[in-house]
View (tube, rainbow, N blue to C red):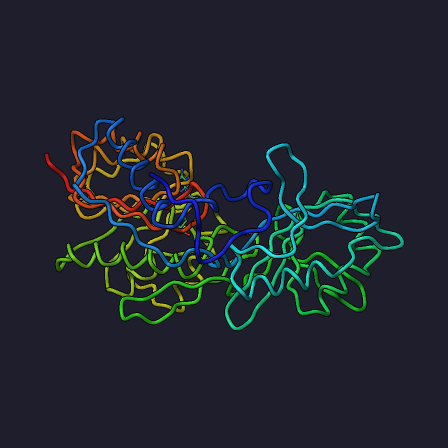
Length: 381
Ligand SMILES: C[S@@+](CC[C@H](N)C(=O)[O-])C[C@H]1O[C@@H](n2cnc3c(N)ncnc32)[C@H](O)[C@@H]1O
């Protein structure tokens, strides 16, 4: 039986806007739906799971500290629309998105007031990411074509307005930084700023530097819940010599908390820029126990590893890294995933070696079908 009313808020763009799917379902029904979906997937893959799947929520909306959207010029009204695509790829203009944190909503409104069309740079459409950061930082990543970037730099009006409003501006696939040098706008090397945060073993916040365009979890608040789960599981099994192999550390969301608990980490990360930021972030938080390996870690030999393997792969899952895990001697495995389908496929491949001990859902994406799963496993043979 499903509830039909979400009492705490309702979105004026639902159901036309395709970004959220569950605004018509009460939050406790959303919780039941997500837990049931994860249990069904575990069953489908023949995975034995504990009777209960804990559901951790940081709130029903208003969590996001970064957001991706599109703007498009509408020739009928001669105005720009800022918003999200519906399922037919039609842009839904949005003034207020309940998923954004109040700070992000504020900068979204500010950004939407700046006119992208200027006398000599006729930009008609673009993809944007907005971010809020530590100490009131605000930033945008304009993921535009090279030609549009060239026109905007030459014209200068739009970019100068954004800079004058205090936005850090990144452009293009490499997230190059827009800087004014001797009165001229230039694209300079990407510049990391403190866009995100994690949490140390003593509960204090650790800033994480990266680009607006880099991967972070969507919300500082729900990432804290996720990180606390990972850290508490690691602390539960911490012995004098526990060490961690971490697959996919990114900029250090879980790495830095583990290091702060004096647990040595070997971080395996394919993205060179993420490795650089991880090194930078760890240098402030304490990096004596950190080894970073920058490579593609499919099919690597970890047969000497006997402690904990922590994995947080992209949606595509671990692929051949499951073979490396099977061949290791790791006593424990923690799997964090935003895509339960690939996670359950991976865990099926490992089920003769690792048994699930605990499962938690962190509802990083309330009002949508998505959620983050955290699974703690122990070796059975
Ligand atoms: C979902 S992100 C998680 C990042 C980090 N744990 C966090 O919470 O911000 C997945 C990470 O895995 C990395 N990755 C993907 N494939 C990889 C591979 N074959 N070897 C090593 N790292 C990989 C990506 O570059 C990315 O940083």
